Image 1 (cartoon, rainbow, N blue to C red):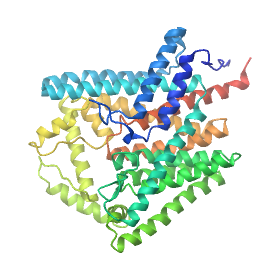
Image 2: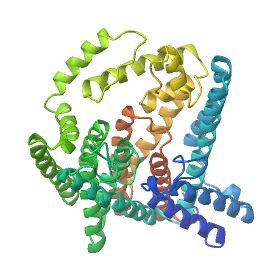
Image 3: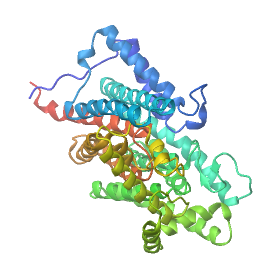
Image 4: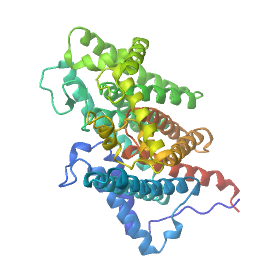
Length: 464
């Protein structure tokens, strides 16, 4: 087998701009509160500005150098993603026929544009990572961005312990940490993969003491911040991520020690928070209640959820901040998603599930499924859901394979963190609509580039 030489894109200044803007975009992932644009508002943050620059400069480099044919491709994943995009566009037929309103068509058009942007970023990001050998730089950028979110998260956590209301904008409703995000669940979704990734950087930096200490502090602060988001999905996701990390790194004493140290710090902080909550700290009550409902009271919550689900009217959606109501809500959304997918073979139309729910519940509920897979099922039908599940499974399997088989010790370790983070994130995505979250597609681009790099390294010993 003859390995192709690594691509060196340093000849083009546009490629250098693409590389720099991509690293900036990864670092800016958690900086959601940083910018509000006219007409766009919170839909765009610093990440999106850097990502658009990455896409534009990468496309300019390929056009200037006439090197579009050198763009890395893998039809095992590119074909399903292209087919999913086509199915998403085709679902607009259903929107036009079933809803037909200007609001519905506008919402559908916006979602198609967002999906096109995300797929373009994914294509550009993975190619830039490969051409410029940016995996270490991108991983460090992720860690640096997490340091900002984690540090401000610790500040917000200290405010919650003091509970001298009103608290700052780092805390939502005086009870849920948001840090640099606007929504505590979005912060949790970012931190679920961040904890194992930064822990892996800590382990991989065995010979770089300062980097190791920095990554360890980021892992600790990220874990503590995740706990105080009060996110049930985040708690389930991080438990799954930690379990996956332990399985993948079971032969590494250093990795196991790092994981267990992070968990021990989180348990210690929770013990202190639980004590304060039991003594009447209202700022910690919500987080304390959610942790208890998913652990010592889980059986009781499931029993209550079964009763609520059986007695709920057919056209009513159950809302509530407690765990039992959350279970019932997801079960009801599963029923609605299956009904929409069965009724509309092309899908109900991306970005419009909440409009259908609004009509199906006699204008009582204006929500989507709060579940990545159920939302994709309802909006793109069984075909779109199958394509999306294939893509997610491909990235997850590739990440786990890298963690076990890569010839690079650094890549094996960090890939284990990324694989564990993806596993936790995907499990958490059953509690919110994660399919177009930027952190997911950055992780996908990282996995793809790592897969290509690993394949090149494995082929080098056979160079002729």
